[in-house]
Length: 91
Image (cartoon, rainbow, N blue to C red; front, side):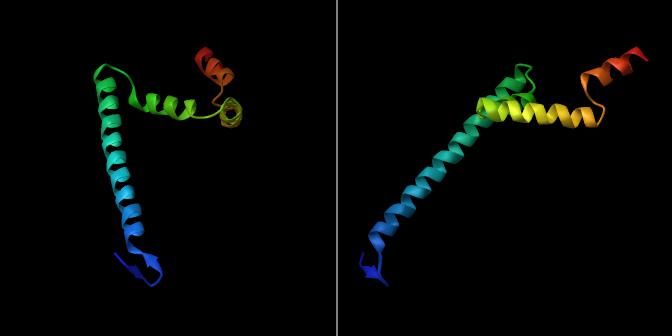
């Protein structure tokens, strides 16, 4: 394919085709992941919690610690902390 307007058509086609193949692979991987979650759900696991764990494991230790501290702070501000739970249970 010739250059059109300064664009090398063969090179552009190559990039587009690579992107299309990768998008197909991504779709296939997404289906595989959904299957694994479905299998886990069938085995009695809570998929929402599993997704949270996967997301948390992607974080480095500092980010994880920071998020946990912020979560605890927000929960305490909303009177949802462990002390509040104990207080409600004692009532």
